Structures are given as C-alpha cells and as structure tokens.
Length: 208
Image (cartoon, rainbow, N blue to C red; front, side, top):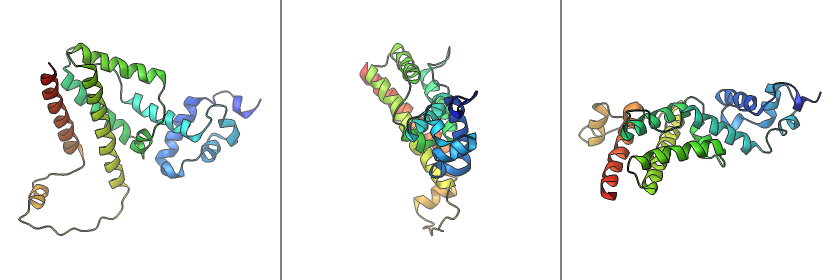
C-alpha cells in the first residue's frame, strides 16, 4: 500500500500535525518536507491531500476560525453581547497557536461550510434590524481589528529584548502607563471591541 493511501493519513491529520509543528517551529520553520517527516511519509504523499503549501495554510486558518465557534447569537443574547463574545473567542483561538494571526490574515480560501456559517451570522444580524451592508461591515471590522491586535501581541511576545524608553513624567503617555494602561492584553482588546460595538449602535440607529 502506498504511503499516501495508508490508513489515517487524512487532511484533518495533516492540519492537526501542522498546527502542532507551527507551535514548535513557527511559520518560517513550517515546510511540507518537515510535515511529511513528522508524519513518517515522503513529501509527495501529502500532495494527494494538498496541491500547495498555501492550501495547507488555508486549512489551518479555517481550523482556527471554526475553533472560535462561529454561529448566530444564542437565545436571549443581544447582538452586542454576541459580538463581544465572538471577538474574544476569535482572539483566543488565534492566540492558541504561534503565528496564528499571520496565517489567518493571509488565508486565500475558505470552505463552503465556513462561508455558510458566516452567512448565518449575517442573517441573524439582519433579523435584528441590521441592513445587510452594515452587518457585513461590522463583522469584518471586528475580525480585522482582532487579527491586527493579535498580530501585535504575537509580534511583541516573540521579541526577547525591549529597548528602554525615557518618558517625560509630566506627559500623558507616562501618566497613562503609570495608571496601568497598556496597548496589548485583555483590557486593551476589550476597549477596542467596545468602541466598535458602540460605533455600530450609532450607525444602526442612523440607518433606521
């Protein structure tokens, strides 16, 4: 039996193994050859399941997106509560893997299953009084904000040394830092999410 058709060698196994390797070696270190070696096969065996490395990366991106739990609001959940929960879950899923945000931000393709789930989310927003274009722009804005925020978080965590910065003790930057403000972390993320939700509420009111 050829290695490509051996029992257990599936696209799902490729993605799960690639994500584990990603956590170990990062995006630059993740290659098809290294993945094949981890699976105990030759590189050509993987091309029965993926045509290019980008297809593998797209599959990994979709895995992270779906792991965040796509879908419409739960019973009794307001659209504001749902969007905040959705954004936090998405961030958590991206942070669960090294370079997760980079992979999702560069995804070139998503499956019909994921697109259907996304459409179900938009339909739920339309049912709550959103124009379709505002629904799309809102979820897109939150997703892009989350991607960018996690990109910064993961970039910061990969730097071992930080250059010390001298601050004017009377300036607002020093005061903000002294009072505990930060540009990364849960509080900073939640602030941005709330700003987007508040702005959306105003836009929704104007659209009506």
